[in-house]
Image 1 (cartoon, rainbow, N blue to C red):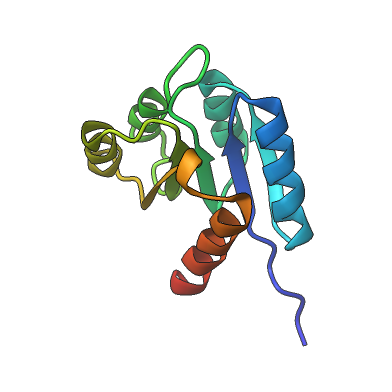
Image 2 (image 1 turned 90 degrees about the vertical axis):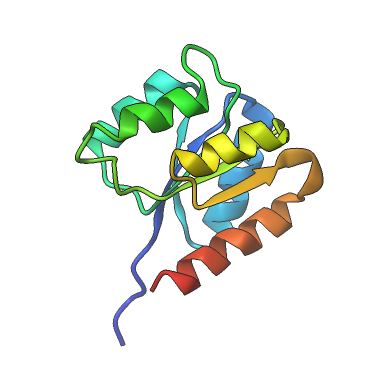
Length: 129
């Protein structure tokens, strides 16, 4: 039987503790996780690698998550990477803007545990087969 293909996730989160916790948790479930700590770093990573999913915070140093998503549209390497927003911004306008920019999911950090988020990510991959 063939080995399952490892899904590669770009995790864009500037809060080191949360980023490391989430990375460790996702890796335990067999995902490969690359961390970026600001919007610029995320765009560099997207240019040099292929990802199956990006987990994106909105409030980031240098460039917001919304700006990252806008930049992705003009990059052939990045334009088809599904984006799940994981942010503390939970206003209706922010959620609508994320969806308008193409986010496949929008989760508010305070309303979701890491376990629930990992479950949602697994769900996303099982639905997108």
